[in-house]
Length: 132
Ligand SMILES: CC(C)(COP(=O)(O)OP(=O)(O)OC[C@H]1O[C@@H](n2cnc3c(N)ncnc32)[C@H](O)[C@@H]1OP(=O)(O)O)[C@@H](O)C(=O)NCCC(=O)NCCS
Image 1 (tube, rainbow, N blue to C red):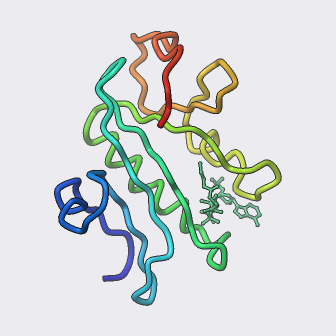
Image 2 (tube, rainbow, N blue to C red):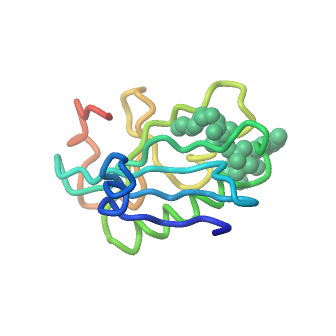
């Protein structure tokens, strides 16, 4: 396998991992990055992206952007919003990548960002949302 591969929660369980949707990035036969997604039902059905990473020695080659391209396509196809906490450290060259990619910051200063959010729903319903 080479590239980014999606696996379902069912497959994750079979692999002995948590039941999450997973995007694994494999280069030269080695897993060097990933993103994981949990389904969340409240306050509305959405997908929470957790643990985006690319191994340090492969930073800055566009791999995180490639993973997020797939994650965002997947979220749009499923016609539900995405949610994440922007935890990229201050000073990291990738800082601000979510905002540049169209993720909207939720007021409140917690770093919460949403994607594909329905216009008719007020972001206020996320008040007190406990990101895992
Ligand atoms: C943050 C992290 C995922 C970025 O991975 P990456 O593969 O280096 O990122 P990319 O090369 O795809 O770059 C992402 C963005 O940063 C920019 N960027 C990256 N390195 C850059 C550099 N040296 N100079 C300028 N811009 C740079 C890219 O241009 C891209 O910007 P864009 O969104 O406008 O296209 C990775 O460094 C990491 O795993 N960090 C530790 C864990 C972490 O912080 N995860 C995020 C939790 S929310």
